[in-house]
Length: 339
Image (cartoon, rainbow, N blue to C red; front, top):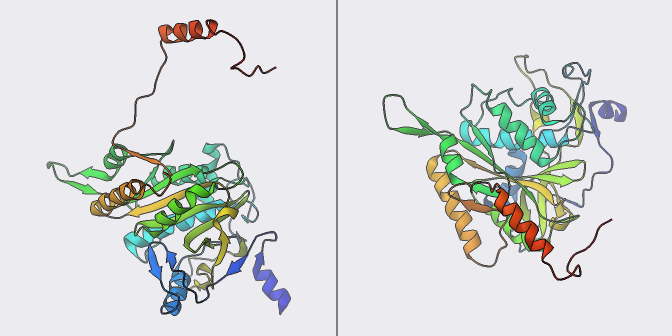
């Protein structure tokens, strides 16, 4: 019996599972913008977690391109986290509809355009760029994916992306938005000054979590309790499901439980994600970003600006002035000579 189970699912070794599930305590639990009191809503909390989509490693699926790979074990965890983010955004928009645009095959093959060979591990920013490119081929869903680069959420760019003008009319419609903001919040570990801001993001109703984890071990973070961040883990290898069958068991796409690690155990490279299905939700999200930074108690994770600032291109005069300034320095004491 044990061998049969191992043939169906394999859990990757080396994954840190410090704490699983929840216990009754005074700390509220936040799951994708929803607050739970474990003293009165523990069963409701467990039901919420179990209702989420869990996308893990799979084996025995059709080969990816010419690579011959029929499993993503050991390299596909960040792609699976990316799938979970998109799945949550699509659930917010369409509830129970399904699409194959963001399959592991499409993600892996599109990753080649980002310099990632099939079988290589992805980081949060790379998977965000891949998801953005794939969204351009999504004829079923109107979801727009925007990746906010350089720690800047530019309002004009998102408004232009999501507003679709109706022909022969000035009226425009809003296409649902998946906003991904890649961040680097430290060198080796997350700087503690950013933790309260990450918590604030996870409290927002538009939050669909964060993708990050540990080096070469991606996790999908969906909430927090106290100083622990709650995550779903893709490092479980299961057999592929044949969706062409009239009936199939989808239980393997839902978690039995979740796990937790401390915020400071996270890798500092991560991406916060938000879903705005309507323009009013987008406006509300902007107000929450503003409120978060105006309190003066939280460190800015990123900037929100109306327009992207023009890039500075130095002129010949600028370069000459800089050279003169360096030549006129009194001594070399202010500079570190490398050599």
